[in-house]
Image (cartoon, rainbow, N blue to C red; front, side, top):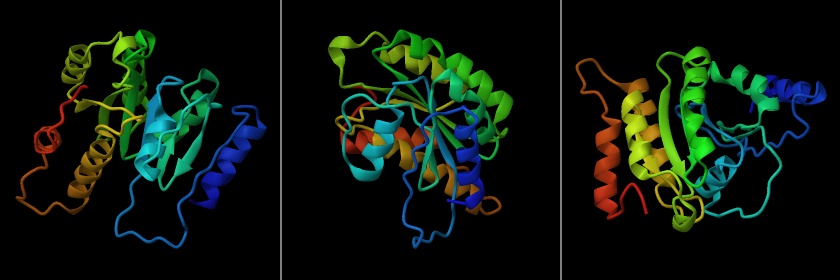
Length: 215
């Protein structure tokens, strides 16, 4: 993590933009051939932090959380609360990929996806990779957003979609791997090389693992 970004986050906290700044940093001794910035967006309590922890540590965090603004090995976990929006807008600009989450048990979080997408188109890079995720797919009894509704919205905006569960881990790794493959292909694509088809990759991996987009 760069010193500049740390200072920015701390300054925002002191100014009252956020009361808590949580940083979960990977080892500074790790080196990579290519580095990308990926952000997790969505309303508060849709499971952004839980998705991140599931991918990184293979664990599920239950219980209540304070709203977070943090960084984890260049994957940024942003807060969905209104008082943190100015921080989020500042970080849109240099993100290469955005994972936009809603909670399948919260109609409000799904209805707000259009507002999030409007902000993304206003503040993010024009070629940013966007993926829509319907989280908490394991909570079948509490579900209020149909899988078909998520698929329809994703198709309308031309973005890949899948349902995930931070609790069971379904599709969590696939979501991050698909994003990573898309970004890597963009960075290393040779002239006349076929374009990476992220939608086709996701579907092929679902069939290979025997899982589906919903539970």
